[in-house]
Image (cartoon, rainbow, N blue to C red; front, top):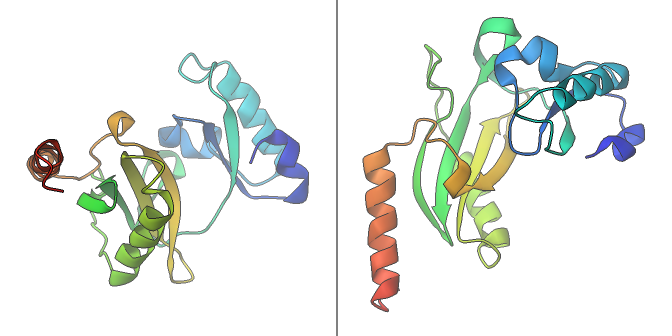
Length: 176
């Protein structure tokens, strides 16, 4: 939500730019326990050359299953990135490639991704869905992005691009 909608929730928050974040400075520029701290982070991000022209968004913090902790308290969770084209999963990979531990993906994560695909497949062609396991159990969508603007985050480029190429060539020849 944006700053005008914050009154309905007391915190904690995740604060980021619309397309970028300062996740590697988690404790200082992304995680806020209170509304006041979330607003202070938003002001700091407005001074950041990467984010000064982006909308600043506030998300309700959802505790995730943490596998290990990085610098500045950054939680490496059991998070996975899925590249999708229309109604198909092209590839997926463990998001936190810098983590020493690798999470385990479960069928529930695939079910959630398929549910999201069914909602958006007629509105967008090439997109990314990031999902993570919640600390209390179950899975949640972390975010969705344009597939052209997203890093691989553990996805095998050979799998992703060969499957995308095959899919697009089939469409070009009327096979799909």
